[in-house]
Amino acid sequence: MICQRHDFATLNQCCRSLAEHIVATARQCVAQRDLFTLVASGGSTPKSLYRLLAAPGFAEQMPWQQTHLFWGDERCVAADHPDSNFRMVKEALLAQGGPVAPTVHRMPGEMTPREGAAAYEKELRTFFGSGGHETISWPVFDLILLGLGSDGHTASLFPDSPALAEQTRWVTATSPGILDPQVDRLTLTIPTINNGTEVIFLVAGAEKKALAERILTDRQASTLYPAARITSQSKLLWYIADA
Ligand code: 6PG
Image (cartoon, rainbow, N blue to C red; front, side):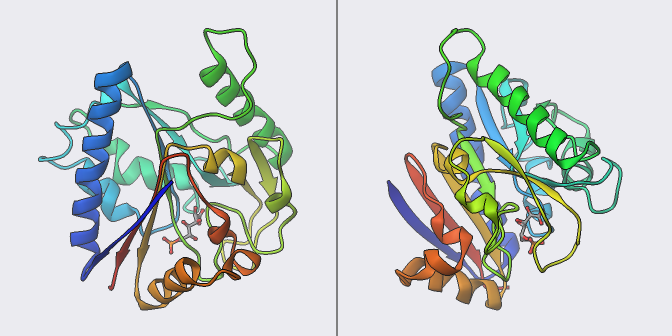
């Protein structure tokens, strides 16, 4: 596994470089097998990235027709709730019109957490297992975007959560961590994320940059921060903006 770090002075520069990487990766995946599976991260930092991917210069470069869009985690709220990660991605990316028309696999945050996790796992197993009759252990997403919480969480994998020990399910439900919003969540599990081909953290701000550096350098970090338990099958990239 290749682990690379890319530092930028501003979030705009960081997102522009990351958008170029996503487009290049998407086009390479589509050239090879006419498909690109992308996992969106939630929160607020990636809004700038999603807006860029929907803007001229990037939108027409992306192979949206062959792109399948998934979520790494979701808050257990309605799809139009202000805290919904689906709503955030819809407003920043999907509703921008133009060529942006991926196939959307929304996490059903409106269901009860247990039902929502089971339903999304079923959708993933159908998508990744479709065709062959073989059961596969883990899905292989082409590119998984992740954020970093100030407590070291990623997706909705919070410190001390039982979800950190999940080694069978692809998707699980979690209680809220210490950070807002204080609602139950749905999240991809660590083995699901770590089976992704490329996993990319997008981090912005001095506090999170310092946390990212601890995660990248402190061998004990994995005992403290869930994000430090994340690996990948090919590349683990950190896109870090100072501000
Ligand atoms: C969520 C996210 C979460 C997020 C981090 C960073 O549902 O909140 O998936 O993992 O990526 O909390 O969030 P910010 O980008 O808003 O700081």
